[in-house]
Image 1 (cartoon, rainbow, N blue to C red):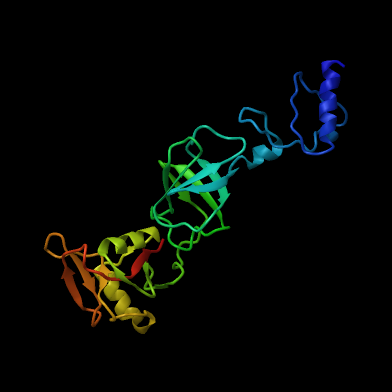
Image 2: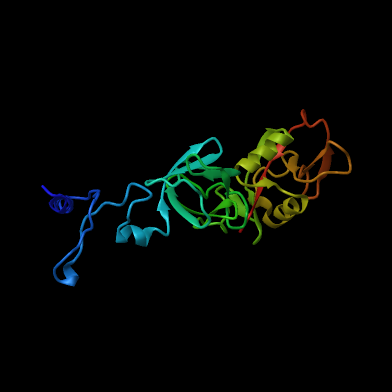
Amino acid sequence: MNRAWSSLLGVLLCALGHAQVQLEVPLRLTGPEEQRRIDNLAPPQESAAAVTVEAAVRDGWRWCTAQRIADTVELSMTPAIEVQREGLLLRFVVPLDMSGRLWARIPGGTAFPLLRVDGVNPVWGQLTSGRIAEVLFANGRFTLLNLPEPACPPGSLSVNANFCIDQSSVPNQLIYQAMDRCARRGGKLCSWDEYYAACTLLGSQLTGMFNEWEWIDDTSNHSHTADQAGRFTCTSQRSQSVLLERVGETRCCYHKR
């Protein structure tokens, strides 16, 4: 069987199902122009292979399989790419709930920050298991393009157009534990003005208020101290030293887009 017949047989076999075809000689189609086509070719499996029309149309984005490794989301695809070029657009199913400071990379590549369009870490409730995420690689970071951001994370309330606050507080935490908890959820400890605004505007909607001192993101004019608020009224405030021993309640704030 010569090469021409071998190539033709390979093309005919494609009609039986999606398949990869490798041609060693030029392929020329004859017959009416509107009927010249090859159906049921599978997408290419090698990065240097010729692409089908469907693959070329869809090449504006790549579908990935996501896996979380520590604080990094690894994005694998077929055919694989070797370089994270500017403008690379990727989509994937979120494998598990994630928030806070995250990184993303392709296998074997450098990890870059995974951020919202406003440069803030994803907050709790945005990257949830099973949701489709779309990220764009540009300017040294992966930017989330399609996730809702103006809404408050689950378990928090909107104070105004700028930020949200946890409805309930978590008791008995050291200042460093409190900071870490809020960071993992994509938020931070509330500043004094944020705490006061939430306390006065939301009032009884916030549970556990005035039960105990709560940590805030504020410092006094003393070294190695941190501040707490809200023990008796919205204006209650005090400084705390001996930070490895003093505990307080934790309530996080989240910036909206």
